[in-house]
Each structure stands twice: as structure tokens, then as C-alpha cells.
Image (tube, rainbow, N blue to C red; front, side):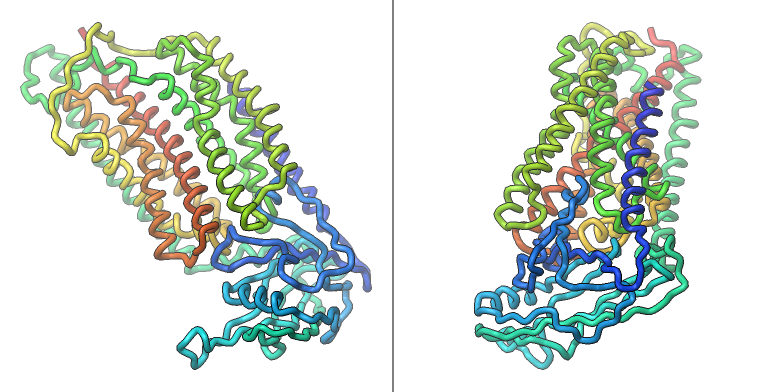
Length: 592
């Protein structure tokens, strides 16, 4: 299994690094004066709704005679990129001043379409020699006007391209619109438009290898770094306090228990302190719904492995800014390749729990996370099709994903399941389980599952909530996130706090003579996912300007899948930490 994991890491890194190298080589062009440098128009959409994007020529811009579509990788299509040849001709080192490339008479319907786009703050995105550029298509004049009916709507008709070069390579490009060259769209009437553009070249000393640095520097500004480090310090204080709290329990309370049991005296008068000893015959009784439990553990372990591999690729620099679709490609490929981990962990643990129908358990493992994700994708893809948005995946891309799931994910899941079944290892329980379960005494309300989950999820969430804002602003906005080292530290802190708080709550549960800890530890560990989803509500209504049915459904739909994945991953972490803790304390006493 370790050799398989090592091979998986190597294969994944090679695939992603090769893809990045291919893209780098494709954009590593050297040009001569007068050479036409490729310019592709990507998409347009409301600035505040990042998921709601449309093809560039869905708006009635002037289109070239023959529109060429750029071939895109799987990750680019999943990202909603639809690159086509742009109408502007930007030759290398060729300056242009107010060149007219199109004269067009806009109909009343086209004027209304542009006005609607300007109202929603539509932006456009293009790529010039694989360098991203953005700009707004127009503006709304609200100055001195109180009623929306008095607003003026304008379309920009003149675009300036400022391009920097170093010898024979393109280094930087910026786009700006002429605020004085406007077309009035306020009234529904036909309008004559002359679309123009200007190009200005200037030399720079920035080397080609560092031309992407400006896109990542915004997330590494001093005031941003101060907030990130404040987040880490806050999280570390939480970890230290929790560690000290647990150390007190483990070193004082448990030490007293061990001394009492070692002398074999009937001095355990305080049931709350020493009650965990009395349920030694029930603490390792297998949980209810053990097939579902093993499948949850296997899926959570797979998602944990997926997260670690994504962090490895991020830390080695695969996900540099605007490496289009690299993250989505990595997620699809690594999830497919790690399905064997889910099959192995789920089936081996299910067999340890003396389960017999391992095939059904394997099917449940394969569908536990993919099933809800597939249903959510079908719904959201249908919404995107209705909106004619670029988020709607083409039939060919859907077939590619289905083939990956059929030819890679499923076989590896089955192979992992067979390997787990043939492992034939028994569950390591230091105490024998009695024939009949002990009755659980009545417990106060705050020892119930929901209050315990609330307590267990709050501390890990408090350790990551500051960093969550930057992640959300990157995934559901236009910020760039590149400080993966800090994010990895926060992730490690999240794992430590989750494990510690779950162990503490498990101890208190056993001390109250409640031996049904299996599902409780999993639910408590995964409850942070519920808190993250609660943060989604706060972010949507308080920190973002997203609106509309499509954007709302995409945000809450896909975040539900992500939080469900966090629930499974952190639940498996919490359970394994609790299992290790319980085995340790029961090995330290003599069980009759």
C-alpha cells in the first residue's frame, strides 16, 4: 500500500507538472516585429457573480469574419473558459492610435442587451500570449441623480492596450478604456458605433520568467500577510490552550485513574471520574450501521489523501496564477487515482467489524460522496444550460468525466476493496466485549449528540475562519490566492484542533458511562463542515454582492458538496484520533 501511495504521488506530480510545462512552452513564444501575437476573448459576465459567465460574442460585439475556437484542456472547460479569437489585431511592436476595426449599427434589441449588461457591471476577460486582461464594457452615470430612471448608461467604444516587452517576448499587458469615448445606451433607439482600439508598446527589463509575479504579488502585500499571520497566531493560541487542557486531563485525571486501578482497590467512588473503567466490556462493541460507518471512514480517508496531494502540488508551484484549469484537472485526476484508498480503507475496516457483505459496502463507498456530487452537478448543469452560461459542460466533457469514472475510478475502487478484504486483519481491541450491552444511564441535555457537535465544531472553525474569507474571495470572487504555505499551516492546525477536541469529548462521554462513541466521534470531528456551511450564509449576505438564481444555486450547491467533503474528511480524523486514544487508555489498565 505504501508503494502504491508513493507511485500515486509521483504519477500525479508528473501529470500536472507536464501539463504546466506544456502550457508554459505553448506561451513561451519569441516574436519578430510585425508578428501577430495571439489574442483570445474568453468570457463576459456580471462582476459580482463569478459563476455566471457567458461567451464573449453572446453580447453583440463586432466579431471577426471567422471565429476560431481555441482547444481547451479538461480543467479549462470545467473552469468555464471558452476562448475564441478576438477581433483586435495586436502585432508585435506595432503601435496603433485610435484605429477603427468595426463600424456597426446597433438595433434597439442590441442596445437593450448592452444596457442590461452595463447595469449588471459586466466585465470582459481576454488572454494575450496567455496573459490575462480584464475590463468593464461600460459604466452607469449616477452622479447627481436620485432616481434609477434618471441614470445614464454608457458603452465604452475605445480600448487602449499598453504592452511591455523584453527583447522578443511579451512581458506585460494592461487594458484601459477611454472615459471620453462613450456610446449613450439610455434610450431604446438604433445607434451607430465605431469601435476603436489603440496599442502602445514599451520596453521593460522584467525577465520572461517573472512576468506572472505581478498577479501573485497582490495576495502577498504586507497588510495581507499581517492578517494571515494574525490568523495563524490566533490558531496557534487555540491549539496551545486546547493542548494544555487535554494535557491536564491525560496527566492528572487519567494518572489518578491508572494508580487506583493498578492497586485494584475499590476507591472509584467518583463515578464521573472513573466511569470509563466500568464500560470496558462495551466500549469496543461494534457500531450500528457498520457498513455506512466503514464507507464514511473510507471516503473521508480518500478526501484527506486528495487534500494532501493538492497541497503538495500547490507547494511545488504547479498552481501558479492563471494556470487555467490546473486545479480542476488536479482534482479530477487525483480523486480518480485515490479511489483505491477509499476502497481499501472501507473494506478492510468493514471486515474488521465482522461485516460479511463487502461488495455492498464497496458500492456504498463509491457512491457516498460521488452520488450527492453527481446529483448536485446534474441540477446545476441544467441551470447553467437554461442560462446559456459557460458553466454548462459540453456533452463531450461530460463523457470524458464518465469515462474517467468508469475506466479509472471504479477499477481502482474495486482493486482497493479486494486488497482490503484479503488483508484479513482482526480488530485490535485490548478488552473483551461482553455478550449483552450495558444500559446507558440518563444524561443531561448538553451531553447529547447535537450539543456535543456544536462544541466540537466551534473550536476548529474559530482557528480557520479568518483564512476562510480569503479563500472564499478567491474561489467566489476575483482575488488571487497564492500563499499556499500559510494555508497548509492553517490546515495542519485544523487537523490538530479537530483531533484534540474530539478526543476530549470522547473522554467525557466515556466517563459518563456512554459507550456509543463510534458515531459520536465521527460526527463531532466532522461538525466543522457544518460551521463552514453556516459561514457560507454569512459570506453570501454580508460580505458579497452575489445575486440571481444561478449564482445563488451554484454558490450554495457546490459549497454544500465541499462542506460535505470536509465533514467526511474531518470526521475520519476525529474518529481515528479517538480510537487511538481509547486503545491507549484501555491497554493501560487490567480488564477483567
